[in-house]
Amino acid sequence: MPLVVICGQPCSGKSGIAAKLFGLFKEVGLPVELVDEPSLHLDRNAAYTGVINEKNTRAKLKSQVERVVGRKRVTILDSINNIKGYRYELWCVARAAGTRYCMVHVDTDVATCSGWNAARPGSERYRQDIFDDLAGRFERPDARNRWDAPLFTLHPAVGTGCSSGGDGDENEADVLAAVVRAMTEDQSNHQARVARDLTPTMATANPALLATNTLHEIDQAAQEVVNAIMDAQSAAAGGAAEVVRIGGGAGSGGPPMELELRRAMTLAELRRHKRAFLKLATKITFARLQDPAAARRMFVDYLRSNLAADVAGGGGGYGGDIA
Image (tube, rainbow, N blue to C red; front, side, top):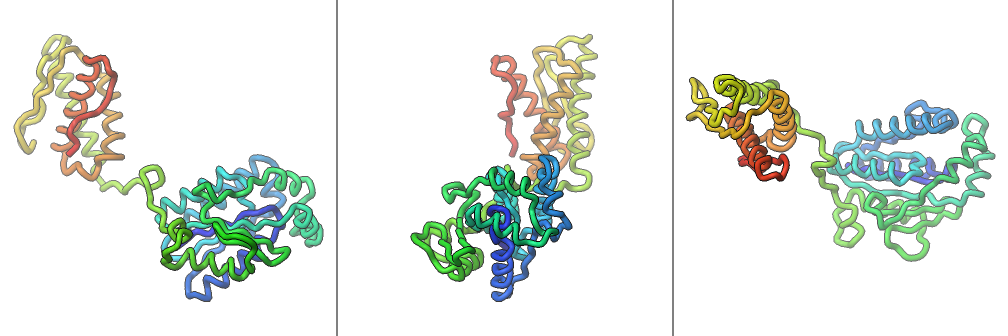
């Protein structure tokens, strides 16, 4: 289910908007998780005093969002979220989860926010220096950025707002209802296309879980190739082994493979190639490695490709068959 990110100046009325959205999602029968500083037992002044504390606060909020976001509940993040780079990170969290996302900007002018801050009880009030610092560094969301779209803007001081791409002021209740519709319904207009389920990519998706012994078997298969090359070079008195035959024994699953070596390879060089192959195999081709024999064949192909590139003067690279 979707991630709704609320941003705005300190004391701009974000928590009130979050509470209204919480109730609206409940009314349509959806479970809701509200993530904010109080839910993590963070004091607002201590949380934003100094760069380190502010960075830790953002990290804690993001970590909690990562834990609860998903298809089982609506997640509402109620915080300042004043840095556009941080909002991009939150968008990546939603994309990794394959869920919808929207930005709700609570747009209240700084003078009104300052007055509302001064009217709060002492324990809930920002210190003036912290308030001024946060207000001065706020980066307004822009609907042209994919991590700020769809963008819904609200003005609690006057009870109005506007939907993403909308013209003029709308009633606050209508804008909040539009947020719920964009996050829960399939619509045919442009706004709904922006508020579709995000698709995870290699950059945002979590790596697949490895089988219990797969990584060990890939490493062992690659090490067998390294040992065969070193043994062949030892038999050639440390020179180029010319042709190295790998595999072909009992349980190998096929005839031996041949690897042509025009020069001697050091153990350090072979280990470097092995590390690079393991990284490639586990991140890209893991699903296509059926057994150790396949891993040996792919590592031999990897070495052929890199050795051919060295001869051609083009540097390392893997162009072998990974089927």
